Amino acid sequence: MKPKVLVMRVILGLFFAFLLARFFFPAGGPATIILAALVLVFFAYVFEAIHRREK
Image 1 (cartoon, one colour):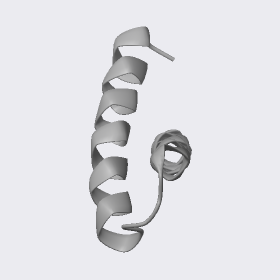
Image 2 (cartoon, one colour):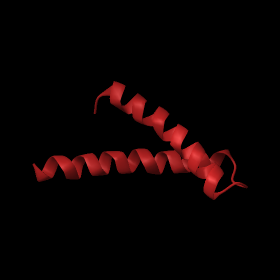
Image 3 (cartoon, helix red, strand yellow):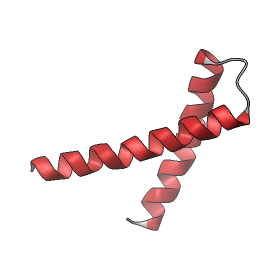
């Protein structure tokens, strides 16, 4: 895992999690945004591993 890629994914994960949480869970707090960001970053790594395995 490269640190630059991790930082970029975390920043983008937080940004998109904020947008998704505001759209789907307007009453959600910061915990909802952080949880959504963690899920987004987790699935980014899962899908990357699946993609690499298929080659």
